[in-house]
Image 1 (cartoon, rainbow, N blue to C red):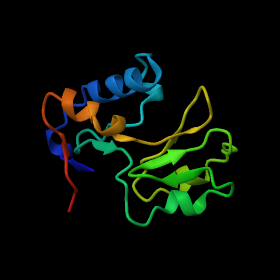
Image 2: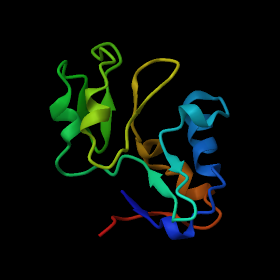
Image 3: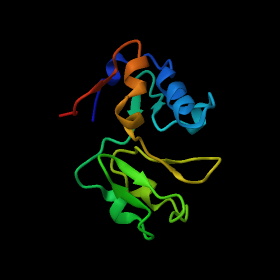
Image 4: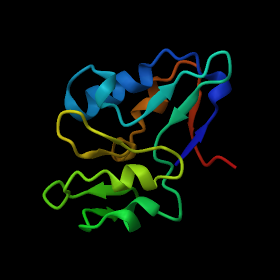
Length: 130
């Protein structure tokens, strides 16, 4: 999935902008499925679903709205916007969309990894963090 290298991140937020544009057509970081938490002067944290093997978000969903198909998928009709998936995520990789109130979970842009392609410092790469 992702090999994140926060030490290379300059907090430019291009990853957040391209994610939002790709999924909503809007350039608003509030609707991005990846985000950068400023930890200055420490290294910033890059938050995104890492497709963990435990899939605690799916287990936490009381309506069965989340499923696995190479990434976590959200059934918008089944989701009750309770936010339990967000609370259950061990890496903080889920946020609720402020407009739709549905979970925003990375789908790798259907395998296109737009955030990785646009990251000027290569802080986001394909692979897995160890």
